[in-house]
Length: 153
Image 1 (cartoon, rainbow, N blue to C red):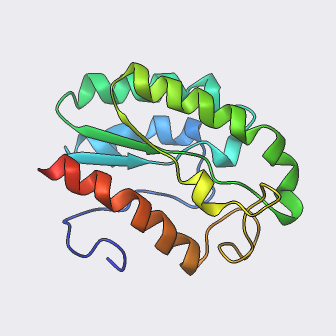
Image 2 (cartoon, one colour; image 1 turned 45 degrees about the vertical axis):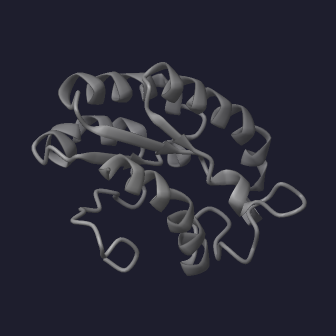
């Protein structure tokens, strides 16, 4: 409500969730709701195993919600105790973009908005090195909103 008050939206993210648990709850979280638009940023919590079922999630959404617009944004950079993940995140984001393009969904690069000069999560936008803080979410919202508005036209 703080970020998307002009839209009728539901937040379906669960702290600590990974792609495996998300896949298990797609029916309740998405299909029963039948949204016009789905915005996803998934995989950060199981970054090294996320592609074991990432495509299954995308295929399932495309089959069950064929008229729904899907916006998928990149994995965020990391910092602090998570900084080693930055070695794989750029390649992961390329893979995500390729999958998104294959399904004619919309890919949004939020990663590049969050990095500092060292390609780490800019400490202005994170407190723990893995999750956006209030300022980080503002950047994400500014980046994603134009895509949402375009989908609603």
